[in-house]
Length: 83
Image (cartoon, rainbow, N blue to C red; front, side, top):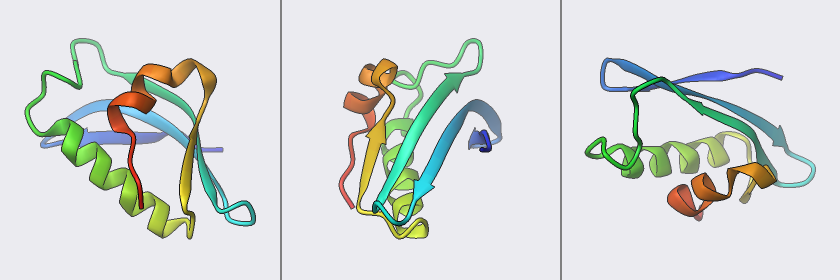
């Protein structure tokens, strides 16, 4: 699997480990890590941008839902999105 960099503006803000399961119609988020000093809730516009990016990734993966790793409960609530 791959860990993808997350950019916001001109800054690297974190990394995400998604896995596309086309047969199951899902994208699994296996991991999510923030760069030191980055706080998603405090970065103006980031939560909305992340939700849009997740929607785009669902379309790219031909998936209808995101499944979050159990340890990512806070991120799931913050970025919960529907296609």
